[in-house]
Amino acid sequence: MIFRQLFDRETSTFTYLVAGGADGGAALVDPVREQVERDLQLVRELGLRLTHVFETHVHADHVTGAGELRARTGAKTYGARSGGPACADEGLVDGDVVAVGNVRFRVLATPGHTSSCLSYLLAPCDPPRVLSGDALLVRGCGRTDFQGGDAATLFDSVRSKLFSLPDATLVYPAHDYRGMSLSTVGEEKAHNPRLRASMTKEAFVAIMGALDLPPPAKIAEAVPANLACGERPQ
Amino acid sequence: MIFRQLFDRETSTFTYLVAGGADGGAALVDPVREQVERDLQLVRELGLRLTHVFETHVHADHVTGAGELRARTGAKTYGARSGGPACADEGLVDGDVVAVGNVRFRVLATPGHTSSCLSYLLAPCDPPRVLSGDALLVRGCGRTDFQGGDAATLFDSVRSKLFSLPDATLVYPAHDYRGMSLSTVGEEKAHNPRLRASMTKEAFVAIMGALDLPPPAKIAEAVPANLACGERPQ
Image 1 (cartoon, chains in turn red, brown):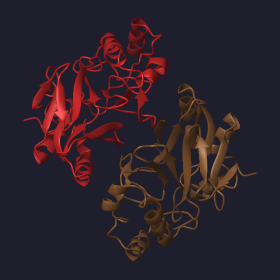
Image 2 (image 1 turned 60 degrees about the vertical axis):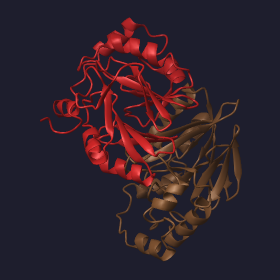
Image 3 (image 1 turned 90 degrees about the horizontal axis):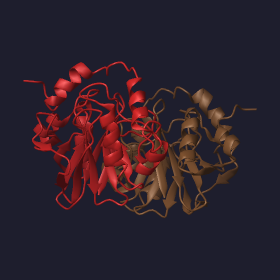
């Protein structure tokens, strides 16, 4: 399997390139519009062709490159069927499996940061790998105060869908702000200050309710743009 | 093996945490002084104890955390014997092997960015992994216009010591400025714009000679500090 973590410094967003198999098909997960040239160059240099673009959710902090990538490569775009990017070619629900070459993307519904966040469990991988979007970050999690976000829902998503994976599972988040690149389920169960095993749902809801964060700088632009795959709304 | 890539955003520096084996010993490679707390917290949370700090070279763009890490943990510090950090507990030369738990760090002398740059080939890894310092970056390389830097020497280092490794070898650089995290020897042989297989030494020397870069912002502070492992010179 080819697996690459890419970073957009302005928005601290991770994009992932995943490929495997003889046909050269490749997927990008959570591409950033300003990084489309970089990402396509890497796809070309690796001898791949882009066939799939996955979104973990409708982002509020950056504009997706999905639409431009689709237009330039013919790749199909994927996101949550309900509440996800309306522009996506295929809507996904919990339990769906999408094959990219010989890599399988298993969809885990992990709402709470937004009402329709997805995570993607990759197989075959040893140890397992999960792309956790904003549901679970390294020692953190996405905020829950807009786009249908709900702290109690996020708590249930992380505990039931992510912390139920083997402890050795590598967790690849959609963002990091401190220079961390990944974590494991076991580490987050032990050390996540909001979500570790000793935290109750009530304590988590109280923490999230007290964050009092300013709105993301790009939310007014990003959400409508991302519902249209980063292309200008018609 | 535990292997973590950590990033310092201000200086675009990668630090690596490497560990393996039952004794819990761990190494940091190219730590940044401002990130010592983050790095030590990760070491603790992973149940490790820091035993080794390696430098790939005497950095001009950031101050190392090696001295503070040594003072706080008792870890030994390592760098090039000749021209490396004078403060290091052990000086390394090409071909040396240092064991960190059951991970072996094989020293490759890769001068050219500075006169005493080292790379570290990790084993056992499949595919192999090399920490290439500033000798080889993703689609680039370190500059060669100070600290004994020499373009012809760097060309020879990359071609003889790094491009002689298997094409599948994962290349983990000391910096990236575009959001790339790693590469492979095969990719760099094919696509590095300065060092790919079709480039001659003369062409490379001409490219490096024409860069006309300003001095690194921190060079006046960083080089003397790093010769003292990031502790203030006596």
